[in-house]
Amino acid sequence: MPVSAYAALAQGQPLSPFTYDPGELQPQQVEIAITHCGICHTDIHLIDNDFGISAFPLVPGHEIVGLVTRAGTSVGNFQAGQRVGVGWQKGACMNCEWCAQGAQNLCAQSLPTCLAGYGGFATSIRVDSRFAIPVPDGLDSATAAPMLCAGITVYSPLSRRVRPGARVGVIGIGGLGHLALQFARAMGGEVFAFSTSPSKEEEARRYGAHHFVLSSDANQMQKAGRSLDFLLDTATATLDWPAWLATLRPNGTFCLVGAPSGPVTLSAMQMIFGQFRFEASAFGPPSQIAEMFRFAVTHNIRTAVEVVPLAEVNAALAKVRKYEARYRMVLAV
Image (tube, one colour):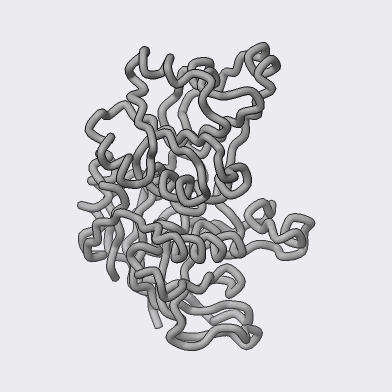
């Protein structure tokens, strides 16, 4: 059966109705009737071909929740009607050292959902069943969808580094940041929210911040000096890197999950004498996404979403482009 979708037919164009034939269902695949798909800013980068890797026509969407409708002959662990999610990755080689370790997100032959075929701004999708993650009953579909990218992007590094009592900073209170605050608080951290918008203080505290720092205020930043064990940057802006390293305690870690357009310039002496770590992180493997879902249910962590019909995708994309979403736009199919 043909799949109905919305696609960018050329670089930077508004999305148009698009239909494609998915072909034969492969033995390891499941077919998913999509009910919800989040809009990530990366979708806009792909539409605009900012990374130079897009192929057109391009169907965006990699925060997908839906119901299994069919399973291939080699799939034995899914039932028709089961609710599942699909994130940035819909397949991998499953044979390399990284896949063998359960770190499929690091596989050199990773299959990105929107690039190795068509994405989730559509009525259905087919993926390797090993990358379809069951969604627990404690999460509604609209809330769960953005967790498949925004959620796992912040959960993955936080789960590696944050322990009870750690002093954790989050730069940028947006689509990623509002989830990071919730996860960090639930992990037992003392949470610092950093934002250039004073209007976000009330929301930041509601999402779990113990402290709010206006990062455009030099005095507040100075007071935050040597405060943090772990600092997570969710912003896309190029930062004053030495100023942010100065917020770390000795042995502190700065983790980059936002994608600044400019270079990252670090002071060697500052890094050496602070014994700092500087690291980056992207998404996580299927097992960690499942772990994140369970954690979110246990600790009542939820995405702030605005749900609109798939037919209004261009208006929703425009809102994301203008950074007007509070905090994730989700398409209902």
